[in-house]
Length: 256
Image (cartoon, rainbow, N blue to C red; front, side, top):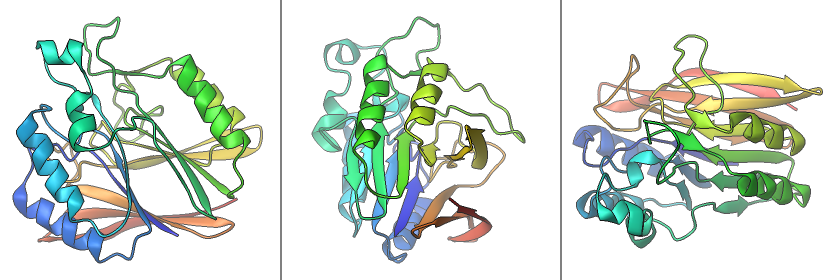
């Protein structure tokens, strides 16, 4: 099974040529699923969501999408009256979606918040209810691979450390450990990396994606990931944009 992991598209602050190359690559990659881990828009305007909706409508395989902090309106009444109203109208009604196949169970978790007890509301948070949802989802799971998608990362890259900016990260990690999640997909930092975490003999891979098409890059070009699942192994291809196309720059194989 082949899953593409894209993130931080930031429609409204994107590069058209990169957008077009991304669409061509995704539709030509024989994918079974695309996971978009948040920040679909730059400022959560109607126009930006319409652009995102048009892009997603051209994809030729199923999409599982979760919001990011940029997908909530800024400091206006809409943020407080209906923070995810535009996201639900143009992208998806479900904020914590699920997907299941014979090989992979995916649980999306919305970490974006309308308001937080912090000066920077771009940070994320995981609630107790969401942690219970993770445990409940995978308690009844039968596929061999367990995947969680969230916008805000729970781990930092060793080569490019940035603040995780995720409230209740310890609670989230405990839920991931208890559910024996195999892969956690995230974005937010615009920096691709893989960080393994071993707990009680079980390895969880924390996989971040770079920005798919935004001009707000951080020390890396645009990129995304493709996960190739087999019954007992997964190969992760990390791709970067160069000279008009996306190509693999690093690959890792993990065996259960």
